[in-house]
Length: 568
Image (cartoon, rainbow, N blue to C red; front, side):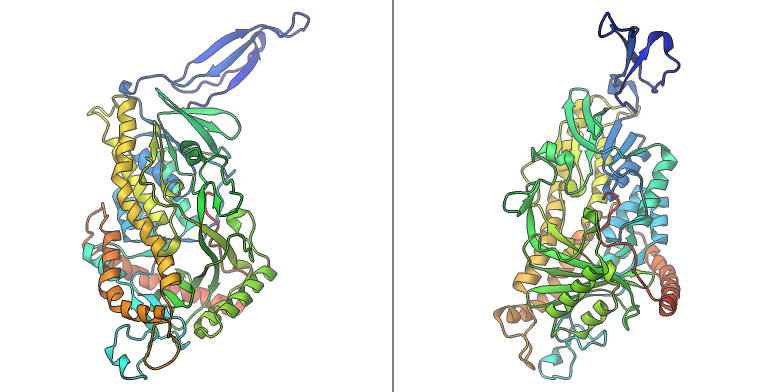
């Protein structure tokens, strides 16, 4: 609410004055610029930031930069906690764009801990993937029929008729059941965005300021001054930088220079290194034979991998991860302000089919049925975990992709932002006195440091696992060795074959148990099973309706872009 502005009025012609609640205007008489002019003396009205001590019982004033998943969830958490929150978003208005986002069991548990109604609304729009077969398929040996063959059958070694389509199945359901948590799945960003906006506005109708990006800040003894893109400033007790991987708040905190500034060699942007991978993505409405039996599949082979996932309403989203130099653009990226043309999309589809020549026909089937305009490309950038630099400076703190961007392999980017929102609010809430007051700014600054210390190790572990997944699959994995053909004969193929029992029975169970070990809601009894049962009926009905419509009318574009996001 403390928006600094200057208005000049002729004293004898002041018609009105806007009063900002809790702020006293300062009236400063200013002489005319020249004795020869006819301008009367004027009054400069400056809305000054409130200097009430925190102990006066007023709510904590929080400014949030960025209206993505992390920013909106943080706003809702803090509004529920009784804080005076204003979110500053660079887009002029929110619109329905953005592809599906994955929420694993840990994120769903956190949403339920934040608010029961929020959790229920998300569940109504959710598509479960973790209730079905998810895992790694042999990209060369899958026979093209989308069959769900056994993952582990020792007779395969001596009987060449035993299928080898599936390499490993992820224990998503078993690990969620271990903690009695809801199962992994996806929700469309526009649906999630609308839910969060509604819930925030119910608590504070004017909580968001669109078209007002925070571009910098200055900490001081009474809090922080946030600088907006139009040159004005706002005062707050806390500034939360939730403005994504190309964060202006981060650039200021870590002295990274201009936002999105590229290095001379093009290998770093805003001091963030290129991961070595580019990803193509597309979306299609397609009734594959295994549509209702599988959640998502990772096809592995030499030097690349291809992923497909059910994202609800009959839609399949696919990604192709390739190790290519940065800037090898073949398609548009709506995150950067432009999508692909039909020609660009078709060229990419042809290019990917050539790259996967000799792979399972399942990949070509998905690509051939993809609307060309839905295809996009993005270079992936990734930062190492911030072990040695705090996420907080004075009254300013970073969360989400602004401080720990993640490779998309585990689908934990949004999940960790939600965990951040919950833990940051909890840390600030813990500094309140019995009366609900905050003792002083020093206690608030300490809470921000406590938040960083409580999160850094877990986030680092998740971030490293996400990075390791790409590196291992592309650089260390290959088509598994088989005694029945000549397809996998490199040392990587033998290594991949011998890794299989370790991955299936030790590594992946440990990985998902670690991810789900954070579950602030606690176990949910039989609720996950009831949610799954209700979804199963809804999912099939909705999908069949869409399949029938597409069969009759065709499809031009399968839906919102994978790359578009609420804070783009």
